Amino acid sequence: MNDSRLAIFSIAFGLIYIAAFYYDLALFRYYPEVGQFHFLRNDGLGVVILWYGWIATAALASAAIAFAVPKSVAERLWPGWAWIIPAAVVVGMLIYERRWFVS
Amino acid sequence: MIVVLLILHGLLAVALLGAITHQALSVVTISPAAQSRWNFVDRFRGVDATAYATPIVVLFAITVVGGALLYPQYRIDVRPALEDTQNQVANGVFEIKEHLAAIGLGLLPAYWLYWRKRNGPETAAPRRYLTWLLAFFVWWSFIVGHVLNDIRGLLP
Image (cartoon, rainbow over all chains, first blue to last red; front, top):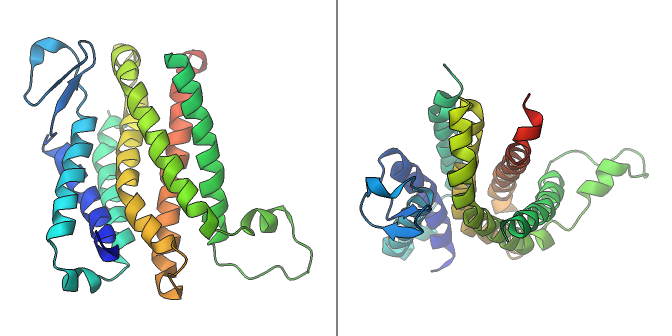
């Protein structure tokens, strides 16, 4: 992965992570009470951890995007997007997570 | 074993907090001290910020991995107890912590890219704002982690 593609990976990661969280697109699920990983939902196995799966989804999809973007396009990327888009993702996430603090 | 891991996670977080705070303050643009004497803040800011970048990447990644290893215990023992006591705020701040840790993990490649020595002044802005974003993530995670770890003693 060349230099500019590292920035594309970071930009895509935040967006895809939030989409994976919001739309329940975890690559896999971990059931800690039985210590098992599953690709599909298994309601009888106790509490579930989706966080690992959201990160895996974001990492794989972002790496694919970073490799797929043509080098000429990647090198024209304005460096400001590398922090503006993740900052916007964080603001959006904080707005969504207000649900925990309002009754 | 879980206690050892929790303490190790906390110690790594302290190191990360110190490093990212040094670097975050070092990129604040303020005019140099009028007098030649440096105060505490000047000395705290006056570090070679570039030298912190790789250690911060390594510490952030290792600390998140440590948190990920601790997470199942939290999910089994702590979160249901918080839900039973209707403590929505505690669950909310922890959920934000897990999102910030994940988004921060994804930011590390860009952060490292813009802090490399051959980058010039044209990347000063992304360098500064990525550092501040990571500093916010680390401070939030540190405070929330400690409060939740001690929550039984903090709540009446």
